[in-house]
Length: 67
Image (tube, rainbow, N blue to C red):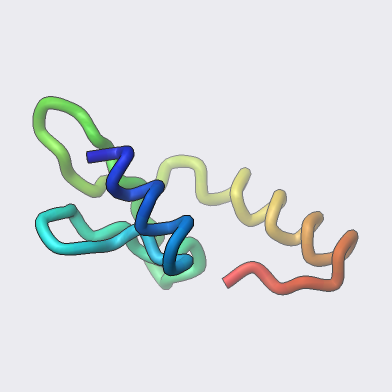
């Protein structure tokens, strides 16, 4: 399942696809983290603050916006 997500992302810039759990965008109002395990699901993003810090640093360094 994870390989399919990575291949989709490499091909289309979107990890989602048929038969795969939805992998939401990083900056959606309530970010979620997909957990790929015995029971695959999306859970509320417990690392939101860390990700936002990295996104802000990336944008300041590169001038490229993280979606």
